[in-house]
Length: 67
Image (cartoon, rainbow, N blue to C red; front, side):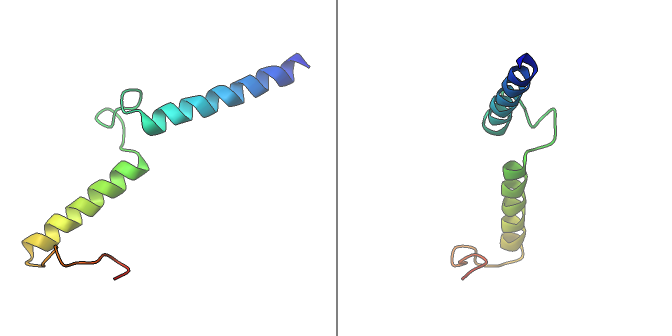
């Protein structure tokens, strides 16, 4: 019985730690580790935006991938 309680507590602690790593840049700084998924995709989108603007595209009138 105690083993199942311990495993349940570890699962809850793991969930809490994942939330801290996902939302808090202090516990998982991108400078020391790889950027998280949302940070990487946002940086990639900004890189392509700058590239398109340098190539002469009018980025103000762009509607995104669905437009």
